[in-house]
Length: 305
Image (cartoon, rainbow, N blue to C red; front, side, top):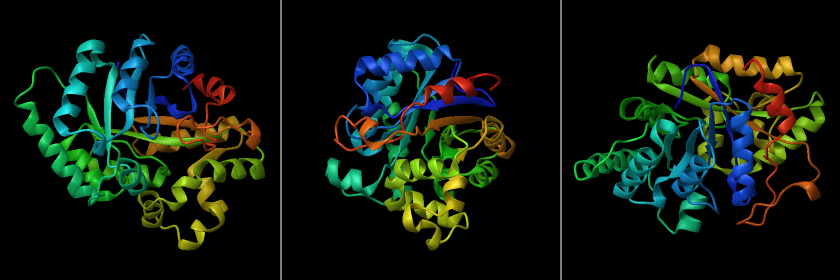
């Protein structure tokens, strides 16, 4: 199935769940008719092991790493992993690659965090070099890309770009850079409520990591937001740009704005309204992470999308 134009996927943060719970969630998302599941690689599951597991637990849905951290494996192993998954599961796997964040790479991985663009370009060169020695066929590859130069690289070297935490104006500029034929698979946060205060509070809790992560807040500054917008967990202006909340029609309109701006696929990341004591704990890190599937939202938005 892979990725088709104006399709909708779901973002699933895996570290919140056991393997059995992930399988159940994946099958439920597939049954709702979404085209894909995208998942990050953070502190628990290894990316391609998880991708293979989710593929084995579903039948039709596309499974996409969003993103696999390139510091976590050498380029040849990365090519082997992708080709293995394609051999085992056909065209259902999309390999999203990214440079992750310095706090993860230097802290948990223990690597020196290089210049993102140079590091990714060199990694793609090394993947090309490894391909000459390997059997098999590659899955589609996209890059986790926020800055304009990384987006340009995604358009020239891969099947396209996978932005995260980016409003429709970023989608529009990304499409201009990568051209009409590349995939643009962008994530959209969704909070299924018409209560502005509750939506913004939940959004600030779920997104607090990104407000201290340079890759993300520099992206917002490039789009015209200010240092003042970054204060206090994010201004209402910035939070409302990043998180779609309101009536079903208003949330659907935000998804359509991305399509109108050139998105190939919009990936829904739901933010549930949960009290802290009810928020699942991340299995590996032992910290709360509020971005977990809101099945009411996913079921409501599955129709007519």
